[in-house]
Figure 1 (tube, rainbow, N blue to C red):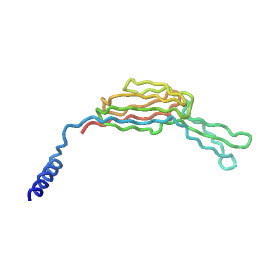
Figure 2 (figure 1 turned 180 degrees about the vertical axis):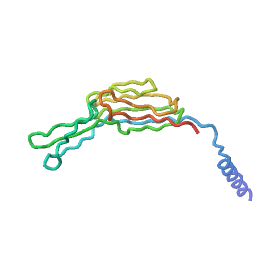
Figure 3 (figure 1 turned 45 degrees about the horizontal axis):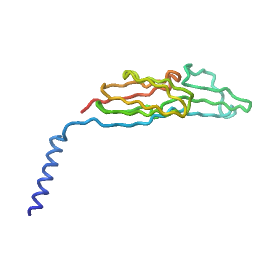
Figure 4 (figure 1 turned 90 degrees about the vertical axis):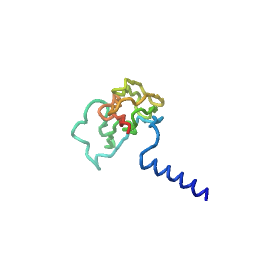
Length: 157
């Protein structure tokens, strides 16, 4: 009988905690993300798809190569992968940038005064406390408009 009562007491505390929302103070989490600098590419020959007549925006984020002697043309863009990082206000955040494609990526996390230069084959880690709620662009100055990600900081509940 005594073990049944202990089980009832534990169940009562659990249900009471769930119903009242009691879970103790919200603590900041330690969050780690790997962000890769990548360049997805697509290629085709002019006999399958004509070379585009409209120019891509100039700024370095989009690259298009005219058809070669075989008629093959290529298009690529530079991006952060993943392009969105979502954390909660108060989290301790480690962003590990790895350079896969592109020689150099001078990058700023706008609103957090964080800047880095990422090179192919290198890793750069940025540490920050997510102490501001909002959306903060992660911008590579050489590869706009496509190489812009977002650090999204959600408010504590």
